Amino acid sequence: MSRPLVSIVIPSYNHARFLAQTIASVVAQTYRPLELVVVDDGSEDGSPALLEELLAGAALDRLELIEQTNHGAHAAIMRGIEASSGEIVGILNSDDAYHPCRVERLLPWLEREHELAFSGVRFVDGAGEPLPADGGWPEWYRKCLEETALCPTVGYALLVHNVSVSSGNFLFRRRLYDRLGGFSTHRFTHDWDFLIRTLHYAEPAFVREPLYDYRIHESNTTETVRHLLLDEARDTLGRFFELVTSETTPNPLAPCPANWPRYFPDFLARYEPGFAPGQTLDAFLALRPPG
Image (tube, rainbow, N blue to C red; front, top):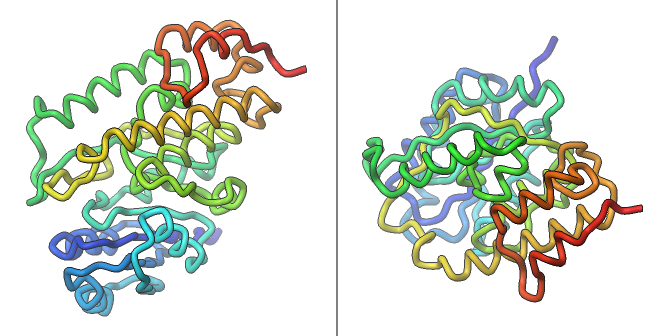
């Protein structure tokens, strides 16, 4: 039986100093066949020339480098996916890295009933060394995992925290991407928005083994744009709740009143996920299964 082609898409932007490790982590994957599509999103640090050099020597089944003016990570990801041809698609941030067996470990979950899988995360510094366990990011992640264990499904856990951390942690079927219509135009939460919308159709698989290295360095944008991130998160949650309370969900485990008439209100009351402006907790608690 032939193995499916897996396409890895890297949206690249001003991460020249990390690219060698990032590309090498794809080449080192134990899985084949594997193609790599890199979309440089208007980098100004010499990344395109370096990428040409790195890809020239990469032993993969197919390689492509696309250059475009800066349009944001979501646009670069979608252009890369459109240029790829694999039935299975993975994303990798240009400053992060895969563990060698990542694709091999996650793919079996997509060959079962799941449409998307993500793994545990290891936080590393600019040099690629693991951050101290009691540091800010690892401590936040540890608490996320603890709360995830208390939730009845991965979907419920994702409404509280983006335990996947990044779109670079996604491996999914192309048909899911097509069904969702790609990524949203959210600048900072397009990854979480994609996951949340996935819940309407299918339950993601969370493999706790740390198979993704997420790099923390001085040019990370999360802290400096936190207020914008929160606004986008509220919009994402609001639109998700409107979706799952207005029509029947193909995913029988999707967090909504129709699937969880007793637990759903209790969950909202306990965690109070952030809502979009004009939406209230009481309004959602009053919801009944459609029909």
